[in-house]
Amino acid sequence: MLKNRCKAFFEYIAGARSQEIYPYFRPISRSWGTEVEVDGRRLVMVGSNDYLGLSHDPRVHEAAAAASRCLGTGPGGSRFLCGNTTLLEKLEERLAAFVGKKKAVVHVTGFSTNLGAIPCLLTPNDILLVDRESHASIFQGWKASQARLVTFSHNDAQGALKKLTAALPRQNSATILLITEGVFSMSGDIGALPDLMRLKDHYPNLSFYLDDAHGLGVLGPNGRGTAAHFGLTDRVDFIMGTFSKALASIGGFIAGDDTEALEYLRHHSTPLIFSAALPASNTATVLACLDILEREPERLHRLWEITRRVKRGYQEIGLIYSDAPSHIIPIHIGSEMKTVLFSKDLYDHGVFALPSIYPAVPKGKAVIRTAYMSTHQDSQVDHVLEVLANLAVKHRIRIGDQDMRKPGRKKENVPVFR
Image 1 (cartoon, rainbow, N blue to C red):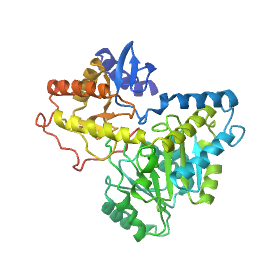
Image 2 (image 1 turned 135 degrees about the vertical axis):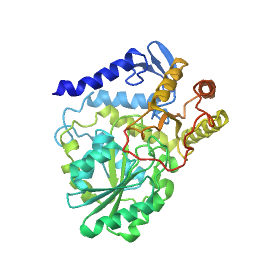
Image 3 (image 1 turned 45 degrees about the vertical axis):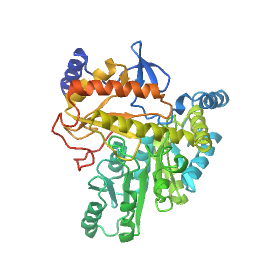
Image 4 (image 1 turned 180 degrees about the vertical axis):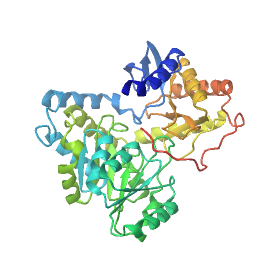
């Protein structure tokens, strides 16, 4: 029975809450971007995906308000019917140009973009070749497509080639869609695009689909994404991105040069057809963020300056952290319970940084996921590093305090949730 299935989990969560160690669903009553108010306390936020701090930029606020005044607070329907707007059409044009593609199709969330696009590009006779650490929405899109799933070890292009070679004799006429991420949300690793792109030399009919949710707005010239970062925009067939990270809104899109495929997708993506359209205020927010990105490259410079400084600080403290060349810096702890308790202590000392435990990361490989904003002040970073230094000693999570792998080594891989 449903009640019996849910009861054990309910009791587990209730127990964690009664011990005051449940870290999730904390209600934020107010936000200043780099700081938030929770339960009447003000904390430094170091776990947000608002990488450029644009969600609190006055120009973005005004653009959102003006669009809402003009077009209302809600869309009134799906894009297919009465919810399409000139702002959405303009945004699709801007996004395509921004990532270097001919056409883009906007969805109401990033999750629904993958959920809708992948089944439009694949049939049950086709093959989806995907990095095992890819986002949960990709695997949900695969389930909807009913294509054959072939996974490969994280960033292992040679392994991907071997897996594909073994899979093809049985389905040698299949369409192949290779999907990886630009920046992996939990590890901070950058996708191995140059190595994976060489699979096209072996299989010219292979299409490359890049989920760039965490790379868009941060990597590449003016934040144009991971494909631009590697100079591979022309060879990536489809670029998917979201607005809920660096672009300070909600929504997602897929862009490419195959305009026929994207027109087909626009009319057949189930989440697009059967969901309400993106509200005007959210659409205008993204347009304003793109304007700022193109005009103010110093925002990106500041983000990377803070990221480098934080990594130096982590090293001096003796933390075990991922030194991948991205803006996401997980602190490796290992034990789920120790990680939860460490997060609680951070919270008690004025730092908002949540634990990532299984299934977001492999079992026994729990982390505190940190990501800083370009709008963080030096004094805020100083405070966080001071708290981390003191608590790292208390909880014995420094190098030498525990027997666990150092960052950069191979690890077990599972699908993750952003």
